[in-house]
Figure (cartoon, helix red, strand yellow):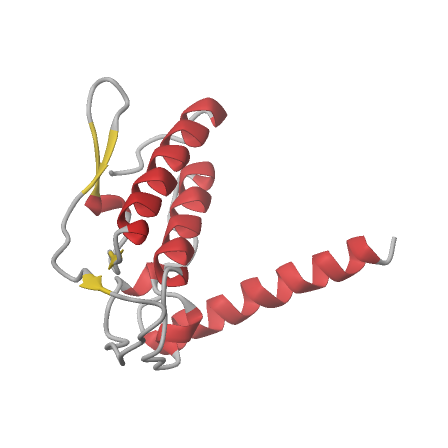
Length: 141
């Protein structure tokens, strides 16, 4: 999905709902996609979204965890735990990427276009710090 224009709020809600429903379908069947990004989401002329390219997908069982590689997910959509080398992870990997897609749809451009793992870690830390800061402020009001 190339972002040429900023999507309308109704479109964003529809696409993200379809994406999360598709991920729920996969996760309920023990499949982690591990490479959610715009170019792996297909849209038809009727606005139907399909998740594509399961080349990095893996089966998982949250009750019997096995180490997995942290070298999955395209850099811009890779969650902090993978940037830090985690080998014990689950559905959060796909959900982080879906959150990046949501932000991208609203902004009309990638939100974390780092060129290296270090620059992506720095962007992740800044975003997480800002979110925590704003949540703390809203709680104390």
